[in-house]
Length: 135
Image (tube, rainbow, N blue to C red; front, side, top):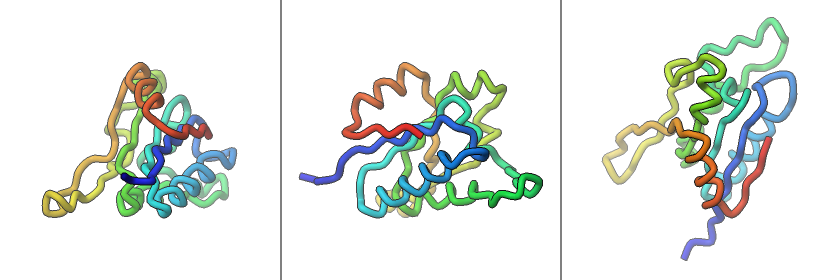
């Protein structure tokens, strides 16, 4: 039996202006490095964290968004986007980074990490977790 706990990290804040997004990403990578079962959920303004083409030069902050593309290398492949949050902000899946992981059981085939789910589906996923942390 695996000792891995199921961790869900909920990202609710825009990527810049606070430290929440960056700190969440750091904690996710640490949890994955310790072989925990890690999932991420992006709700509210957190959906902006995965936007394509982020440019932070004008605000003078390092753009950490490319780091999300490394999540698959850490076996973090359960990334949930709340459908209602996307729609409320006029966004679609096409506005977000394309995040993938490689399935070794299928000859390293690339598979999508992002799943768009309703708030009701997300609530069910929260119930399945051992630990839920909100950023």
